[in-house]
Length: 125
Image (tube, one colour):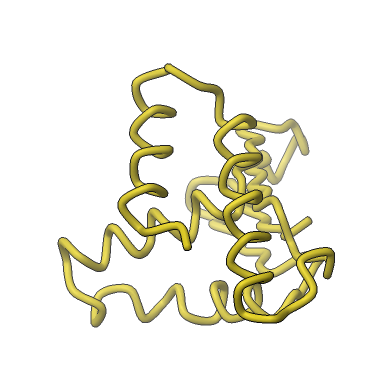
């Protein structure tokens, strides 16, 4: 069974540019499938794989930021962050993580900041 240490090693290799984020996502997915098989679950059950964040200008609708992040990296990052700041500071992320873990796909969040003139949208794909 893969350990958290092995998963963190993959994240470290990504941060050091030894492997790409896509290669890291593939490795983490392979580890997830291995975990699912060991737990007697169907490893082919589709799950959300990507967190997509888009920031646009409200007035012009021009995209300012558009990033896609592998879900496993998001989950590992939040777990790693909890280690340093404590779980109580991450409660705002609980709904997003629950949606990811239960297989929700589509738009999770849309928020507008009229002061900065930006719209933020978060999707799970």
